[in-house]
Image 1 (spheres, helix red, strand yellow):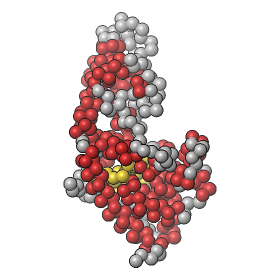
Image 2 (cartoon, rainbow, N blue to C red):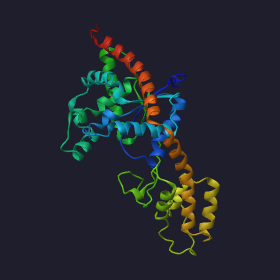
Image 3 (cartoon, helix red, strand yellow):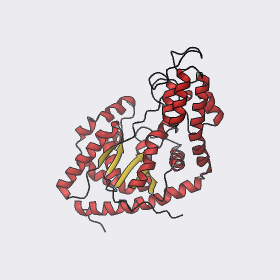
Image 4 (spheres, helix red, strand yellow):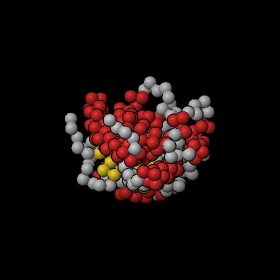
Amino acid sequence: MTKLANTTNSKRLVSGIRSTGELHLGNYYGAMMDLVNYQEEYDAYFFIADLHSLTTHPSNPNLRENVLNVAGNYLAAGLDPEKCALYAQSSIAAEVSELAMYLGMMMPLGELLRCPTFKEKAKKHPDNVNYGLVGYPVLMAADILIHKGEFVPVGDDQMVHLEMARTIVRKFRQLYGNIFPEPQGMTKNAVRIPALTGQGKMSKSDAADSYISMTDPQDLIEKKIKKAFSDPERLYKHQPGHPTVEGCNIFHLHSYFTDEQTRAELETQCVRAEIGCVQCKARLAESIKDIVNPFRERREKLTEQFILNVLTDGQKRAKESAQRTIAEVRKAVGIITV
């Protein structure tokens, strides 16, 4: 299987995908859909960050399984291996690790120790404050710069790491010349899908009945929606409801998943007390099933061998890019290659 990624666009984007966790609606409408759109606009490299996961989970017997599962999810969501390179971070470990070593020489230890995310992780995992955790921002910089990434989708918690990468680029440029561009951050889609409980956003760290998994069957989706928190001020069906994002958690969910015309009809019927919360929830379940079912069907059709083939092809393209970059770096640094 030979796939050709989108090389017609000169704007290069690099993004890491976490290799752990169940996929739910919040993930799908947040980072995942962003990446699907980016592949149309950029020369995109998407890697599954299995090396990064070892900083907090050094013993993970399911690591390979997780990588395959995440890759399958993104392919089912719409990543097209003909338009982007999708690969495991570890599959170009030699080049990334070598570049990280060179870059690490330019990053003061004190600055790494002061990094807010390091402090947070060290506090959360006090028995595993390892070298990899301290050097996480340097490895992240290497992930980006190994492809000379110009654009990087990041959340708020990663902005400090990206700024460190930009600092490293400037230091490298002063010492060895202009090899790397300064990567620009791109704010990820700030979609915060509310939890079914009405408390905060959907999160896999909460109870399973607080979120909709992208693998949930139809009957389970209906069951979860029926129990979902709705309008706290509407106790009886004959009472007018409060169909706003602030007034009703179910209507808030409708604002993401139900088409505008149907939402307007539901809003009118709710205000007039023509329908109750049970009917409104049933319509929401239909809207969500229209999204989850096609995804689940596409995911079930993807064989492990197909996913492995995609990752292998992605690795080939990523390897070619990485080896070109590392050759330039060695020459600039003065490393003798035989």
